Length: 140
Image: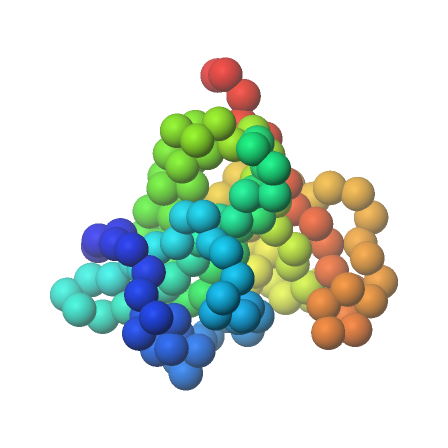
């Protein structure tokens, strides 16, 4: 599997082939670290990180239907990449929202090492409750 820079074509493909109920943002929104995970020309996932401050970032992911068949490998590759970006760029806190009851999203975030933080927000994602997940990166 190969990680490469995200392109507009990758984003369009994933919008049409999303298997992860992703929320796609405005194409003009700033993304600091964006990637495409593919194998032999087949896109499995796209994702990125947007810095909130110098040391805090949001993480997001969209997985395609083809990617679901390689989920364990995708978890491992994304986790390694996320850890590398955070350590290289001084990001101490990485965070993401997950809709309550969306078990695939919860599992992904937990595999990436994120843990629940605080109480769920009752009407956060399209009027549905959501939970904040966070991972801290220290000097260890």
